[in-house]
Amino acid sequence: MLISSNVFLILAFIVYLLFMVGIGMYFYGKNRTTTEYFLGGRKLGSWVTSMSAQASDMSGWLLMGLPGAAYLSGISAGWIAIGLGVGTYLNWLFVAKPLRQYTKVAGDAITLPQFFKNRFRDKSGIVSVVAAVFILVFFLFYTASGFVSAAKLFSSVFGIPYLAALAVGVVVVVSYTFAGGFFAVCWTDFFQGMLMFFCVLAVPTMAISSLGGPSAFIGQVEAFNPNFLSMLVDGATNQPYTLLGIVSLVAWGLGYFGQPHILVRFMGIESPKAIKKSRRIATVWVAISLTAAVVIGVAGRMFLGDILVEGGAQETVYITMVTHIFPVFIAGIFLSAILAAIMSTADSQLLVTASAITEDFYHAKIRKHAGAQELMWVSRICVIAVAVIAALIATNPESTVLGLVSYAWAGFGATFGPLVLCSLFWKRTTRQGALAGIIVGGVVDLVWAQLSGGIFDLYEIVPGFVLGLAAIIVVSLLTPAPEKEVTDEFATYRECID
Image 1: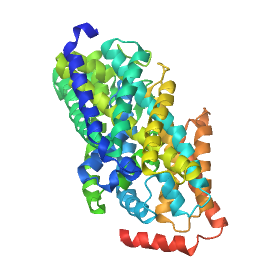
Image 2 (image 1 turned 180 degrees about the vertical axis):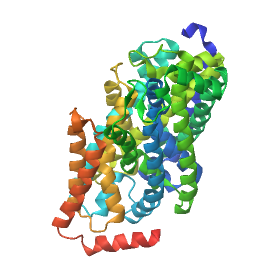
Image 3 (image 1 turned 60 degrees about the horizontal axis):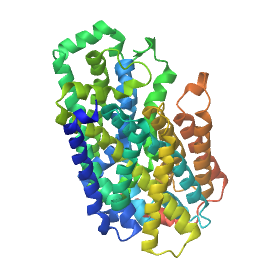
Image 4 (image 1 turned 90 degrees about the vertical axis):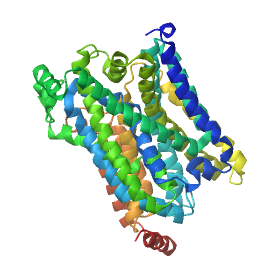
C-alpha cells in the first residue's frame, strides 16, 4: 500500500496517535513527585487498573505473534493462551491484594526493587540494585519487541523502510510516556485495551462470515488440514506434541508472578476492595481476547491461503486480513489496535525501567538527597535512554515479536516470580535467600535459553523458576531468621489482608 493512495488510512493513524499524545500532555502538569509519576499516587479505579494491566500484558504479540503462530500451527498455538489465561487469574487472585497492601506497609514502596529492599531491611541495597539490573536487561528486549511490532506495522501498511518505521513508533511511545508518567500510561492503556478487545473480536467474525459462516469455515479447515483443529498435534509439522512441548507452552503462565509492568498496576490501585472487580474484568478480557487471537490465525490461513508462510511474514496475518476486509479509513482504525497493543506494553516497560534506574540507582546510590523535581527529570531522561537502546536492539528486521517476548517473559518470571511469592507468603524468607533467588533464577534462565536439544528444549522459565524458588528456600533456611522488626511488619501486613 502506497502512502499517496491511502490518505484516509494515514488520517486514521494520525487521529489515534494525537489522541494518545494528548493524554500524555494532559497529565504532564499533574506529576509533582516520583510517586505520582511512577505509581499515580495509588489512585487507580477498578476498570482502569484491570484494563491497563491486561493491555500492558498483551503487547503487540496479541495481534501479531499469537495469530502468526496459529496461522502456521492451528489451534494448538492455544496452549500458550491456556497458560496465560490461568496465570492471569491466579496472579489477580493470590498476588494483587497482598502486593498492594505489603508495598504500602513496607515503606510505601513504589518500585518492585524498592519493595524488596524495604521488605528485607536491606541496608546495603544490594538486593534492589541486582533486581534493577535484571529489570534493565530483560526490559530492553521486551521493549524492543514492541518497537519491532511497530516497525513491521508501519512498514507493511505504508511501504516505508523498516528503520524509518521503527523511528516513528519509538517517537510516539516515548512522547506521551515522557510527559504523562503512570497516569498517562494507565489511561492510554485503558482506551487501548478497549480498542484491542473490539478489534480482536471483529476481525475473525468478519473473516469467518466471508468464508460462509462457522460451519463452512470449520469444514474448510478440516479439508485443508485436520490437525489444524487438534490441540495435540502441531499443524505446521503434523507431529504430535510431546509432554515437554505442552509443558513449555503452558508454562508461560508462570511468568505472571514476576512481571514488573503488571505487578505495578496492583501496587497503584486505589482500594484493595476494588481488586475483586478488577480480577473479574481482567479474566474475562484475557480469556476472550486470547481465544479470538488464535481464531484470527486459523481464519487467516483459510482467508489468505499460504501467502504468509515464508520469511516470518505470518506475524502480519492480522494486518493483511484487515486491509483485505475493511474500507481504508475503517482499516486504519483496526490497524491502530496493533499500535494500541504495542504502545500499551512498551510505555509501561519504559516507565518501570526508568523507575528502577531512578529510584534504585540514582536516588539510592548517587544522589540520596535529590529533590522531587530533579528525580522527575532524571526519570524522563531514563525513559529516552532506555528507548534508544531498545530501538537499537530492534533494528534487526529479522527479529520476531514472539521470540523477543518469549525471552523477556521467561527472564522476568524466573528472576522475580519465586521471590514475589515468597515475600508475600513466607515470613521466614531472608535477605540472603532473596538475593540468591534473584541471581539463580535469572542466571539459569539466561544460560538455559542459549542451549538446545533434549531437556534443554524445555522453556527456560521452568528450570529458572524452580531453581530460583529452591535457592530462596534453601538459603533462607541456612541463614539466620529475619529480625523481629521484619516479622512484625509481616504480621501487620497479613492483618490487612485477613
